[in-house]
Amino acid sequence: MATKKVKKVVKAESASAVKPVAKKKVVAKKKSSSSKTASTKKVNSSAKSKDLEAKKNSYVIVDYPVENETIAGNNYVLRIGASTDGYVEVSFNSGEWLPCRFASGYWWFDWNYFKSGNVTIAARIVGSDGKVVKLSDIRKCKVS
Image 1 (cartoon, rainbow, N blue to C red):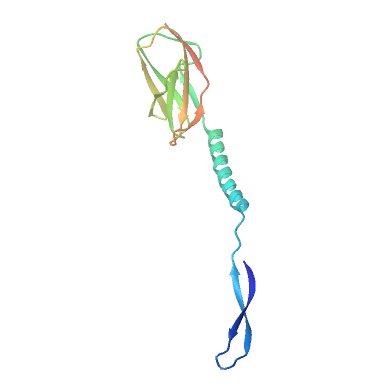
Image 2 (image 1 turned 90 degrees about the vertical axis):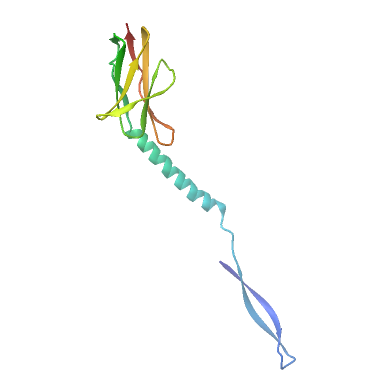
């Protein structure tokens, strides 16, 4: 803090003489906004680096069906391997994302009433904040 000396004139009650008296006045300096911004940037970059680290360690993969597998029948259970960074969803032919269930260390999706033809399957991990953590590679299969 900076201090500034101010002279004040005080009259003595008993004498007609005038005495100068030094009085300190405290002047507060404003903090520069750059130091506040720098600390905020450090916090934000720290949070971002933690998010990036989590994304590096995250994985999601469609285990079954295997690549180019032909599926026959009326139902199939997909098995998806994923890290535990959130919950898993699956999408067929770039359609809507559907929730999977967790059991025995894997994520599962009960696929029913599918149509014949070529199908692409993708899975993703969604964090508790609703943001996509990791997206799997596209898995291709054929339904007969």
